[in-house]
Length: 363
Image 1 (cartoon, rainbow, N blue to C red):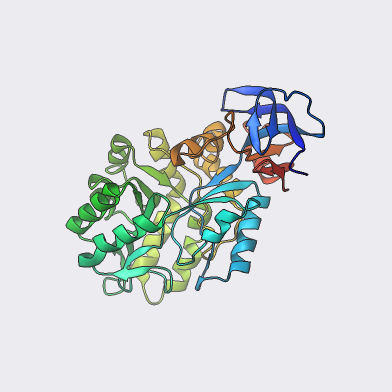
Image 2 (spheres, rainbow, N blue to C red):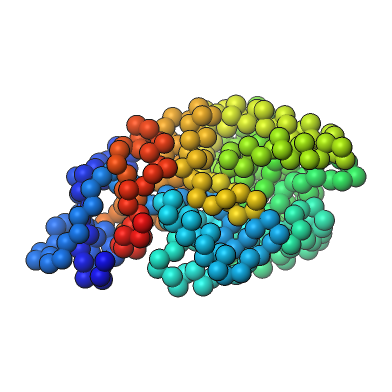
């Protein structure tokens, strides 16, 4: 499609869960709801249109061993794009992916800098590994490097204990979160277990990744403070296999991981029912494949979140939370078109009819 082609999206345009229009126009890469005067070359796409999907926990430029070359990162980003994911919050990466910002054919990325973990308490080659006295300095560094987010590793296996445990003392967490906020960044944390959550939330954390350790005691705290969760249920599905692999060396950890997995749907549903904001994230890029946002939406529905709310968690609500536009007048035309209404059946998300990025049909 040339730069001068006008794209006409006709059918049902889901501007919001309830706001539906019959058509939109894409002129010079941007959305308009006014028919252009004297449009020459017009390409029409028909179907159900939604804003480009959001994966709010996705690692571009990372695999299970660490940073990857640019050609591999490009394939990861293209896989997400083909699946309709056009906005990514990269929740921690050692890889410099700024070059992607210069590519108008690749998804837009909001970076959280590099993970910040306790020494020898995370996956090798992923994080800055520091002690509590250095945490504030590293948070400041990543706040300046990222796109308004910082990522902590809030808990991990303590090999001496043989189980998951919190990585940081309360005072270090409070100072780190205050520093991120002072620099205008939001801060999130990887948390599988229970014991780090109260300190993080009371210290003012903005989001928690995975959040499998939520309980009846901490869920109300999250709701009261408006702390979002990104459950990454497609990743939590790997817990039984991880537990099997660690059984002989860390039986206590293995049993804990199985318990967290067994109650995962109840945890997410209880959080949603209490009013905790829930968003779609896949944790792609570690050991998990890219392009799984539709599968994660399906998992949220399985957990008991209403389909329209699960759809919002990867479209309208997710974009609003990340401060990015949806199908707004004048916004970049990032949208996905389906054959059927995804509000009625979220499985439709797995088969995009057309993907439009920056006004161009790319898939």
